Length: 140
Ligand code: ATP
Ligand code: MG
Image 1 (cartoon, helix red, strand yellow):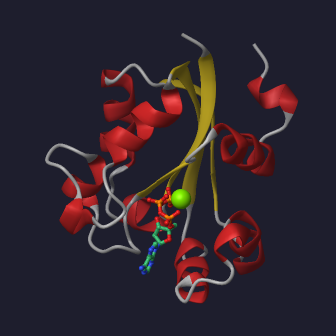
Image 2: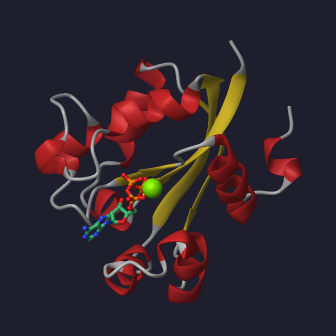
Image 3: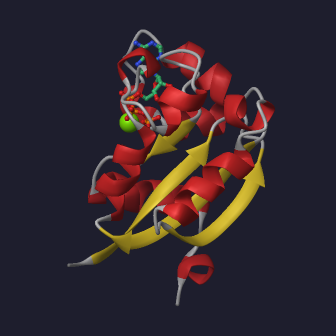
């Protein structure tokens, strides 16, 4: 099975709620390997660039205001089938629809404030990883 990489973000609500440890613990329990990690506070402009694919959605302004409202933890994860495995661990976008045991079911408070981001395909993972990390950060 191909080893691949994905980009995850512990969103400002997850940091505010002290879920960083819970989420990293879940990654380690599920054999999602942490390749690179940093904490930062996005500007509104940086959040808009990251979520540019959603710029025509009605929630774009609110989403990017939320994503720039506090510090986030950005990570590159690796492992077999990691994109799908992370998305399964995250649960549905709307926590009300997320399965028991998923991170969003446990920690998210709304469809917007849903604790965690994960890339949804190899192409978006490549763009999102390069948005935050250089080749040097993720080599080896
Ligand atoms: P993410 O891209 O953050 O991993 P996702 O792929 O499950 O989440 P998307 O459809 O890509 O969901 O939406 C991106 C983010 O926009 C969601 O995670 C959520 O924070 C916000 N969002 C999505 N739908 C809505 C909505 N209807 N109202 C408000 N915010 C929303
Ligand atoms: Mg998405």
